[in-house]
Length: 257
Ligand SMILES: Nc1ncnc2c1ncn2[C@@H]1O[C@H](COP(=O)(O)OP(=O)(O)OP(=O)(O)O)[C@@H](O)[C@H]1O
Image 1: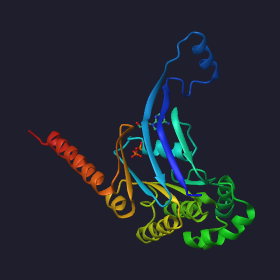
Image 2: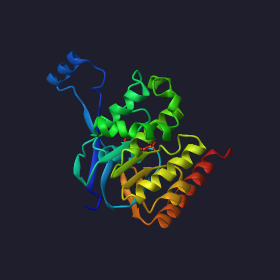
Image 3: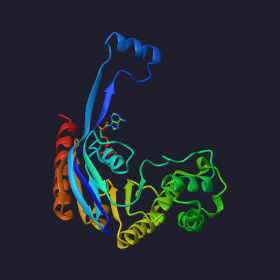
Image 4: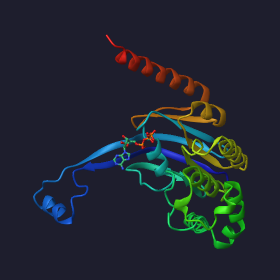
């Protein structure tokens, strides 16, 4: 069956309020006295698009646009408040760096744990572990605790696991910019191999040139809203114009009088 991912009218809200870090007793008291304020903040607002086998979607938008939140919903980490997400096949997500890893466990233990979390058997991981480690260039670090790896090494391991477990849908949040130049080139090549193998990939990146080079579709988000979806060149050109416009406005503000 062909891989697909369908996002229909998806909205995701966060609960905001003064209930964080207040302790259970205070929480109960505030509930009883109705002194409890909860607001909903719509981080992603009515997003709809569809991807087919072989698509590589780039998500663009300024800070706080809702890109990571949308990825978390696609990865199944967050439940949409409204709308539906339907997909075929196994989803492998590489979200915030280091998330899903245990700092005290070794690199090897973490790789197996992550594999298990993605639903893979020990036999599959036995077969794939060597490839993961050699792609991440961490042969000398397999017995080291994860927390002793440098940030770049951690991201290399995370990328290698997410990409080498043969996902049908691969989700990458700002990861290609983390490793050094050589690893960035290698991971971009690996991503193209995954896509050629028929997977769907979603990539969040602040690098427009990377999006232009790699993607065949683009989603532009702004304050949670879908500004545009589709053609890479047209949307990236408009986004660039938009960001330049903002830069000019900001420059005007900072000009001394
Ligand atoms: N746990 C949370 N609780 C409340 N609000 C949140 C939470 N996480 C994110 N937000 C808010 O949701 C909005 C979208 O955040 P998100 O991280 O999805 O944006 P983004 O486009 O990925 O941003 P960036 O480019 O800076 O990574 C922002 O306004 C952010 O403040």
